[in-house]
Length: 137
Figure 1 (cartoon, rainbow, N blue to C red):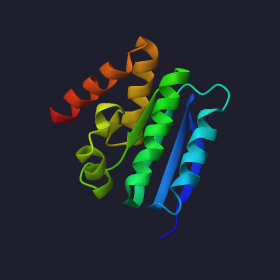
Figure 2: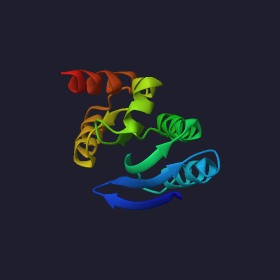
Figure 3: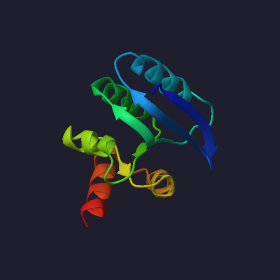
Figure 4: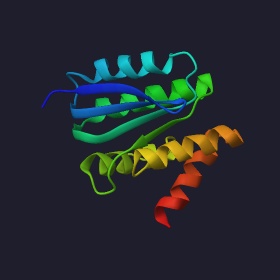
């Protein structure tokens, strides 16, 4: 299955829907798309929705780390969402990426989390702790 990326605004945040397979062949396209979206004017945060992603290789993890670092450097939060029991979620959890990037079950949860981060100016490390407590609950 090929990669599909769709970007929309949800409130003051960007919502990036990623679908299909993310692999070595197309991860550069995903990285470029995420970095370009992160540069959008008036961007107060980014939600990366992986619910429709069917394969997520190591190169996809690199794309997420790249945009998370960009967000950290530029002062906007990034959150990722995928269904709790999906293979994508397991890959991201096993690699401990959730330690640097907030992860939620739904787009709505991610939107609330980004709004909270924005209101409190919460540091990156604390963002992950907040989410981790909520997830393990």
